Length: 534
Image (tube, rainbow, N blue to C red; front, top):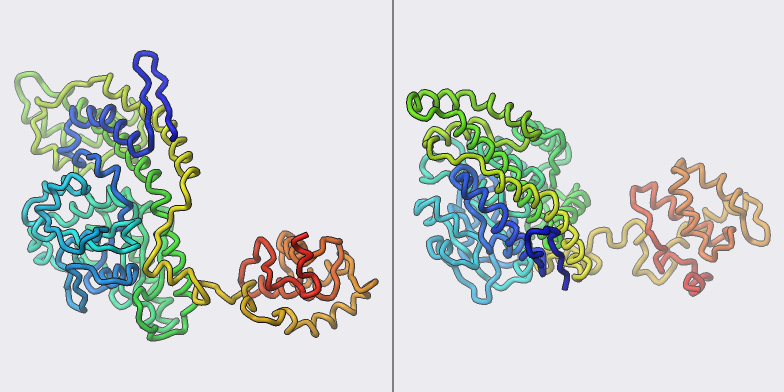
């Protein structure tokens, strides 16, 4: 069991037994008092509860209707879940939290938000119009043992559709975005238009780009040439909405368990699916770090919010002209941001959205805002400067002490095991199941080259082999690794089998595959088997 103490001469040291407990206590003792005093929860995000720190990693799926969100979940779990509906029309009209449970069933939204063990209590603020379209589908599934998945209603186009929801759809998604570990945006290869509501949703997810991944689904339904055009159009559309210097990661494929309609890009789809699966599988291992990162982001915003509130309070007159001064301050909020930025050396990226903050301030009574309380800010500064660093050490210690945590079950198992695992029997893995040495197929042609190098006692020197290997035009670093793998007996020379092996590995690399870090047993020359272990 790991623990660490806070160096503070005025207080008894706090001992944190694990990261989750440490995050809870830091939030309760240092950050929450600042948030509560300056009404952070009225402006930005509801207060966090213990369940927010204890819950499993969550994956949020967002996309327009009929892009395959529900099918994607079904594909991951290889099992239907309660409340699931799939069709070409807008079928999922609810937010469905798909979670692990010993008993299969559905928990309606109003019951879900009063359960202290679930991280959804603060969704109560969105009212009955939302809660009537929110449910939890519980079932016993190996995938859900490690993660929870949030299915969302399909995003539609048109002002009428947006109003008819009866609740602030973008605000609900923003609430989830703050708490989930991964946000997956799904696009249909046939429907790339980004509607007004979808654009609004993506903008609401701003500041969470690090969690965002994009999936171009149903890519097997178009040809390679069309796919290139669709991919380019998608990147262009996203570039106009997601204003980041980095290109967002797009995974291309067909994420369901049906035959590919056009199988030309099968290898690409398999590689993309594996990359996405690895990303999702890593979530349990990185969950504590993600929660720590989100707490830091929240603390920085809370600190800036406190400075904004106290600055507005300071500028208000004590008796006359309060309403006119309030309007003036809201109008000049941008200038106040700049002043705070310079006075306290705060990054512009830490400030809340200007337009949204102005709208929220319109309904507030500035006279009720509290004055600056340096002690509260000092506690948060101390948390960011000292406590977080110590908790980071504890995160690493917990990771090292636990076995490798990855998502298992469902499609994740099928993608890893047996001959249908990605890359099985390809590249350096070619011939893994064969009785004959796979290099032997091309050995006659390699032997012809070998004997032109004037071998002595059946072996060629490194200098002689180098001249031939350089013809591949591979970098010296790669050729050096190939030499190390091929010189099985480590005598500094290559015999005919080792020379053939070196040429086989060159071919593997030239075909675009990675070299193994250690020579696989099926590639060891027949006359050397047993020697590589000595």
